[in-house]
Amino acid sequence: VTTNEERSLPDAFLRRCIVHQMRLPRDRQSLFEWLFRRGRAHFPKLDDEVLNQAAEMLWEDRKRFLDLRLAAPGGAEYLDLLRIVHERGEDLDEQMKLLEIVGDFVLKKHPQERRD
Image: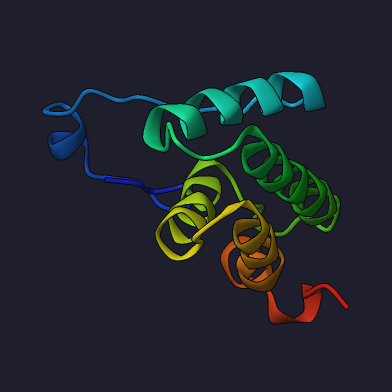
């Protein structure tokens, strides 16, 4: 169950749960390392260039959205983006193109904030 701290769950329910709060690293290097490890664990055959470019895109969008106090993309969006690239891209060139094509749709939840 994910609440993203937007609502409270009933105490009776919480007593039966193990609560795990995930906080993404705030500095660029730590976030990239965190993302890269998860990306590599889920998609061991993806090229490092794809993992790094997806992390860079997430970093830029995350920074912008946090500054605007909007919901920022996180680990789930990063893995979603990699999954699409992994399943649809035949080779590195195609995967890199797919990152740019689908990145806006996966990373941005606010249409007014799409890349130009």
